Length: 157
Image (cartoon, rainbow, N blue to C red; front, side):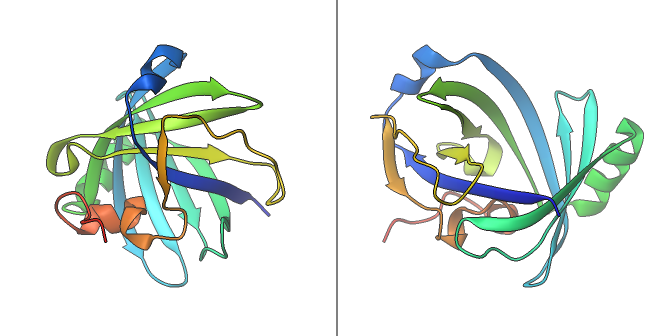
């Protein structure tokens, strides 16, 4: 079974920008979101499309299956997902033994910057960069599927 184990944080400063190794522009659309499963289409740099199925989260872990699909199919599915879509730039920033993905959201979520790190196990030790803010791993308001359904940046509190 495919599995995703990740922690997610708000970003408190721009100091991460000095460590960026590469960047991609992502478009994401959510075809289905339920307590049982999420079905997402993602287009990378308008050159590659991926269909992802995710199971329910249990802490920082959840089942995840990803499949490359033809770009034209990805575009069709993205249109089908509207208005539950979002756009962001993803920056990869090595720190310690991990590579952080810093997502800078665009459009209706402009101003939101979230960093996430994927781990091999839930017990992995992760060096936390100084530019991180509050952890939001368990805050569903910051899940991309939730953001796709809600306009604007979530209110703190």
